[in-house]
Image 1 (tube, one colour):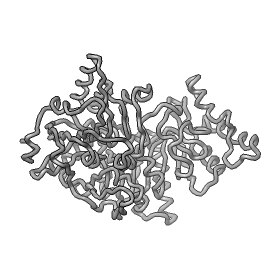
Image 2: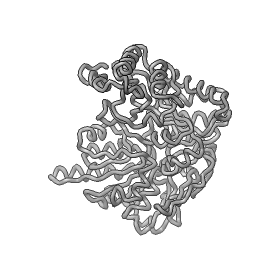
Image 3: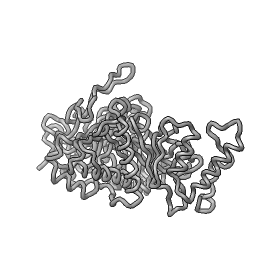
Image 4: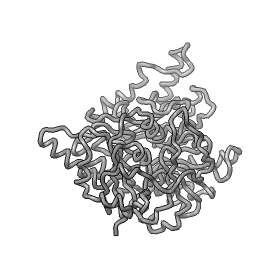
Length: 501
């Protein structure tokens, strides 16, 4: 049975191949999708086929691709394989597209997730020619039931000249009512404060809306989300999680937060899931999350009752996690709320709610600067995502990483980071499997002592201390943040030359 019950839009149902004809070479295309959830399943493949045919005929066919965050092989992957992307923003995790970005074939605008929608409204990115948005259903009056992610969908629908809707029957029809879509966005000088004062407070409506006159095509699909890779925490991840949970106990004991903690934000990945597992095995109860991605770890906390509710922008579940959510969907209603990323990542709201932010990183230096995005300073990994939104505005933030990478060839604690995403002014706590460094209220030299002593791998600790002590000795008039400029990035250069730091 069709889920397109709006008479006007049901007359525009067509195949993905027919719909893709509305996209022109050079168009900026806004697609749904956030962390492998809610992305269009068929139109990207049809676009890729058009690009392949054009390239075989000696013609150029590339688009600017804008999303909420990462998508999946069915979207980013097929378009990258067809060399059909000229510009990508604001986040990406596809391996082939990453390779093209780092080869200079694709221009990548790595933006804070909270900035992407508003900067599009400001006109910083140019016009949005067409939006391709997955929804669960189209109601008789034309309202759109969102699916497993919201991301920037509202903004793309508002701002695009033309719209293609993919109606995915795989998305459970019972997901209607899980969403809170805020429509009060204004441009300066007419902006207004957000009235969101509780993590699960509704400030919008359960539906997306689009001007029916802009909808040029509707494509019906029945395809699952890709699902996020998930593995059980290893000893390193469990050690990191243990340090975080112990630290939170100390904060409660010191009276700096209540027994039920403050709203939790957790980045993607196995370390973040391990922290959630650690909380699930702790004494903490009645927790709440205000985050951007709901992973298996948070779903586990909801199932056990440790977490009472979660506000998010998207699911980032494994296949098993998606099956669990679908099977128990009625029990999650009222306990999970999906919002646009301009709200889930809004700095004003994050600061007001007093969020505890936990995110991964590539490396940190001894003074607390953090690199979340670039390997050896130049090659982008995925992007900054929402980590900056939360780190700068959180009540308390953690940056988490194993102390080494590449089987011990790389130290993730270095004299100076090769790229800075989060400056020392924004970083509160750095955690590895060896311990944590609480940097709050410390001077740069005190931070260096704490990071070296508590976070660095023992194999690299003596060399970090040697660097730090020689920097103090050799720069008598520059001891506030002492560095040896001819050696500060020598560890990275040594790795590039020899394969080991």
